[in-house]
Length: 559
Image (tube, rainbow, N blue to C red; front, side, top):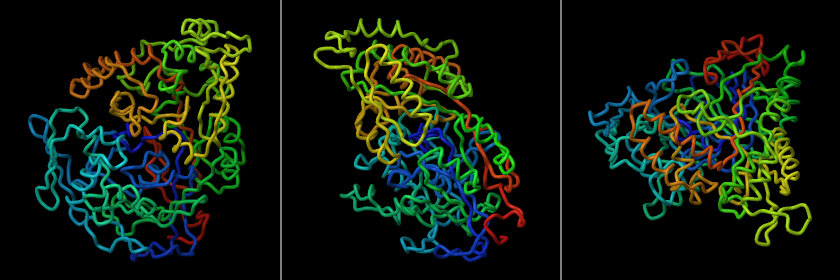
């Protein structure tokens, strides 16, 4: 959650975007300015991030897509084994026998990115001071990162042992400490440092619009409403993983249909399709001639979340009625070409934590009516809309605009609810505005998706402590037994015992229906054929391996 701790947080299970730099910039000297020479770029489509690329405070999926090329952490996932391997750290951490102390040693000589706008000088090395600063910032209650902070709350202290070595000491054991600490966002202290009495300044630091990391790409420009451009870090420390694509361009295209038109014109190199586009547009000869198609496992799910702070959805019976009124299987078959599976809970359907014994609630409008009647929602004035205590059952569903699959789902649900006396209004917003309304809890119901981690912990989304204004439990789900299970699961190192706890948690979620869990489906990706060495791994690509033959370089000169 924040998926593999946080990097995934707000979710939209769409395809993400990347792009390489021009050949003339790939000399030994680092590039300055935008440059004008052509080169073998990689262009992808995303929605414009919602205001900041600061990795600690951003809760935006698209910001995370960009930051994944700029910032780094102690460890990374091996694409084949999916196990943690050293990244900024020299090795995996040393772990004390009681599993409460974790010692990480940074590699020496790794430099923060230089910057054309002189936000930072050249040749500044990442050290233990940056790690300590990043952790203290995460734990500062005035910094807007409650979604991350919950994972670190059981740390007792963080110590600098020398210039490159940091030791974390925990108050309690936690089965995910390696994941949490190993994937912690590390930001440059010399850029983000703030006066002790004014930690709020971290939230508005200019580097939020101009990220500075240690990764294989460095930030070049953010053209509002158009694109973000990254260029290859020519002094990247990891020569074995030095990318061959010199420039990555993230194009901001809100509408799925418009994005596909760019694909057909070969103006986008990598694109995540909807199910409809996969069988229709992506199957056209003009697309197949130029693009390869990939199905990639997705470890997330889509949902409709019911805000339990509202008069409409505080009653479990009403939420259960809503789920019975959503034709999930029919929608999956007719609108998504049966690509995927209806899900019933918070975990990835292929993970042992998912309770396979639980079957989806059926589509049953008569049962939905019964639940609403039992909950006291009746049509007392004969106008076709149910009411209770003088309040009409007339609510609003919030969704991100520009994605037909969300709109089609909303229209379908609206029609089904009208049959049982419930009026639903649809409110679509651009991504930045959508995220803003979500964070302010300004909605009755919302449809979106979560990308899950490989080592799931439901705390961030479902523990009652996360139901405040800055946590990820934005539908205000509270359940004492669920809280106890989540807390106990954090201390359980035996996989079978922990999964048994998660199975019971799954049962509670199925009973309470804080979400109507919709479906899990594969990511459907198009990649332009001019890219060589494109390999599909279990959960995606390693585009640092991609390259383009000189004769196939769409944008110009060889690198």
